[in-house]
Image (cartoon, rainbow, N blue to C red; front, side):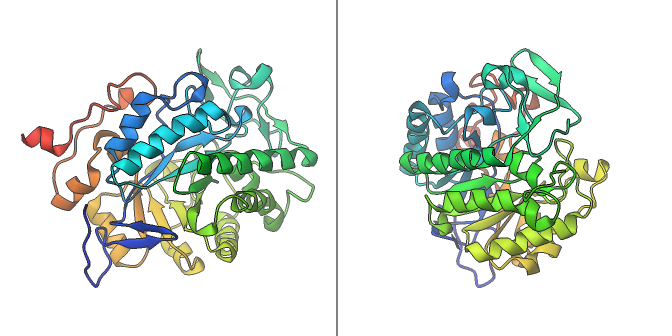
Length: 369
C-alpha cells in the first residue's frame, strides 16, 4: 500500500475523503467499457477488471444506469435489478478482498440515447425536446440522435425514485458510497444548462430552477446514504454530447456553491480538455471553483503524475481521478510512485469486446520478472 506522511500534502499522502480513508490520492475515474453481461449484469471479467485496480485510493465505477430508460450505450451495467445487484456485489467483494474501496456512479443518459435502446422503442426523455448533434451508439451501429420527449413535471418524482432505488441497491451490493453523474451532457447536466433546458415551469429558466431537479435527486440519494459517502460529478467546461450554456461560470459557480450545504464526501470536477476548447468551451479553470467549494475537491482531465502532485501540493485539489491511464495500467499508483513507464493503450479495445484490452494488460511484476 502506497502512502507517505509528508507535512506537505501530495499525490501519495493519505487523505480522509468524507467517511473514506484513502492511503493515497490516485483515484480511478469512471470509465465506460461496454462489457456488462446479459441483462446489463456485471460479469466475471468485470470482477477481475476492478479487482486488478483495487490499489487505487478510490475506484469510481463506470457509469451505471438507474433504470432501463437510462440506457444510452450497449452493454453498460445497471443497478435496478436483483441480478445486477448481485453482479455488483461480486465486484465489491473482490475489490474489498484486495484492500480497495469502490463507489458506484449513478447514471441516466436522458436524451443521449436512441429508440433502439429504449424499452418498447420509445423516445428518450429530456428536460426539453431538443435534438442533440451527434450519433447514438446502438447494437446495429451509430445512428443520429433523435429529438427526445420533454418530461412532464409530474414524471420527475418517478425518476428521482429511480435514483433513490439505485442508491439503495448500491448499499445492498456492498459499495462504499455513490457518485451522482451530473456531468458530460447526461440527464442531470441537461437540466442544469440552458442550452438543453428551455423549460418554462419551476424546473427551467433561472439558475435556481435549473438546479432544482439535480438537487432533488441528490436529496433522494441522501435518503439512502450518509452525505460523507456521496459525491457529485460536474463538467463545467464540457462540450461532450452537444452541451453548452450561455454563462457557465455563473451556472456552475452557483451549483458548486449550493453543494456546500450538503457536506458531501467530495465534488468531482471534470476540467477543461483540449476537445472542449476546440468546440468553443471557455475553459473555466479549477482555480475559479476552489474558493467556492469548502469540501473535498477531486479533479479529472489529462493529468500525469507530476501535474497531479502539483495540483494537490498547491491546494487546488484534494485528489486526482485518472481515466485512460487506468485502462492499460491496473497498477497505476505504483507506476506513478516509482516513476515507471506506462503500458501502451489499445484504443480499438476501449469499448466492448472480450478480455483482450480489458484484463490482459500486464502489471509491473510481470514485465520485470
